[in-house]
Image (cartoon, rainbow, N blue to C red; front, side):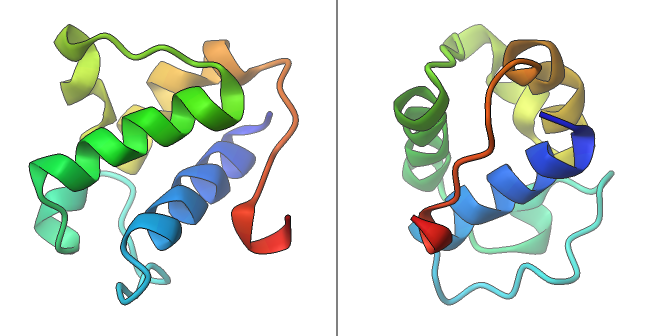
Length: 91
């Protein structure tokens, strides 16, 4: 997956979990929880959806790596390099 596809994948997962949020203007380097309404359960749902869709395990110690979209790209890039993009909105 490319970096742009990782961003798209994360936005798609967030759209599934928080369908009322406007994700069009998310900034790469600002914490997601500062830009949209995500509580700790929503964040856990994101982690669980990453595991379900892509088989990626994110240990609790690494959760802060996913705080921003840029962090998601950096952390998930190597883990998703050979995975195809799977979008729920296009499933």
